[in-house]
Length: 145
Image (cartoon, rainbow, N blue to C red; front, side, top):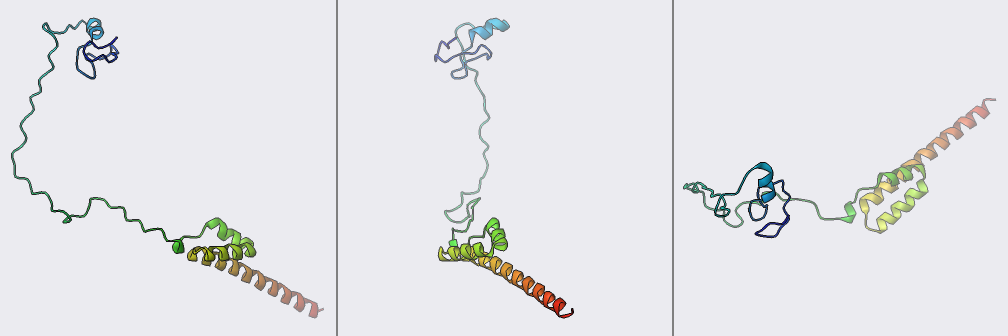
């Protein structure tokens, strides 16, 4: 059913049109309510007058900071954090760490490049140390026979 005043679609579930406030005849028939004679009169709302008080003057331009200011640092490729996956790859395969580290440093990502090179270097150093210790143990056990 369409509203007589504005032409919008009426659902029959609300007493008035949601757009113009005209009573819905289907709703009125269903619930035994009938619009007043002489046409529909919108209800008058008697709002109280605004309070008369002394309000502080509005702040001057620039005297207060904005209520919320997102302070994110600007993008700086030299300060990009390293990817954890590449650091783990650098530890497991030092050659990959040296390659990623060199590529990152040449791309301007100093922090990430240094982390990849450091992980690869430490991994390679520990591996060489373990090989030396195993070799010394092997030489010492062979000389004791």
